[in-house]
Length: 415
Image (cartoon, rainbow, N blue to C red; front, side):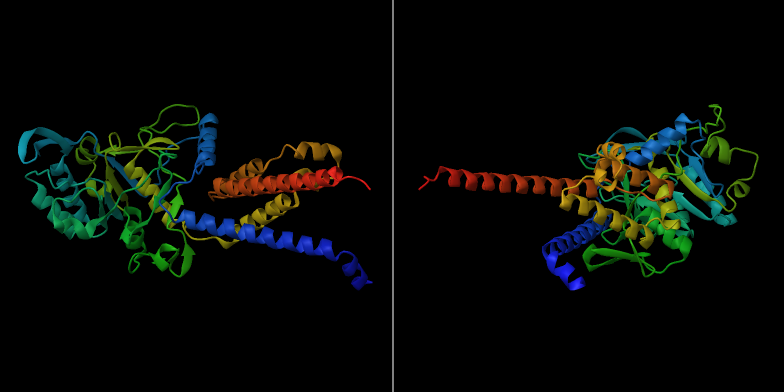
């Protein structure tokens, strides 16, 4: 009886088997493509839309924004400035403004002697063309300290080579399509980024932490498959002040270097005790994000938090769920059916006829965000759009070919 069933439905079974195989293949291709794109420096369109929607919802419901963990102390140097001589092509042209290096030296000297801080991210670039009387002492202090990192950039050289062991890359990229910051890359051509160096130092890891394999085809961290880039959740944001549930401004979520930290009666060593110090210009060094303008220091800190939370590690449970969703959606496309096919109730069928693939992936992205996972809709939606276009063109070609055969038959003379 079973053999009769298979013989009778052999063609149908063969077709269904082909569709299932192609659906799984489509799901696998999308999953691999998402991983590969996640390791690139290219931000994907629509990456942060769900994150922005959640942030807007928080603002609408009056939830407090700008929370900073107790372990992090944000130190703003935007008003701690000094004038130094500036030259162009070797000729003096006047003065320019830089961060007051004498105040930085005072802070770091105290921090070095106390040696009670967790880590220091000194987000101040020491350009080779600018010089102050405090440079030598400041640079020696930085070079002699443990648990400290300063930024470096590919298009600018540091003032002193003694700083190189303490420097890490602080660059990120945008594209013509995505001009705001969204994705952070941890390893830049084997060069550690600032967040990755902080992560390696804090975890006491050997080497770079994240390792590149086969020229960047895949990455690992401690033997686990990981991504070299992530879309940041941005749990730490600098808004200038905390906003409570009633919409009232509270104290700033950062302190000023000169007027608050150095000039307060409260000893500096007690203020920095067991803290990660993030020292940067939160007014002028700003970048566009889905949360509005944010300091570059905050972006690096959020990337560091993402590493410490393991956001870069591949979570196989989510990978399996996404793969199954891709495969199921692919089977619908290949069968030429809509989501209304799942429902026998005609009213539900009509309702689900308006349920598009983009809507489905928006729901998936929302649920993923609730669980602390960033899901990008662009890759699967684009792939299925291409499949849908191909199927439509193929059906149109078959229809025209069939009509041509019928017309040729009908044009032949009878008898």
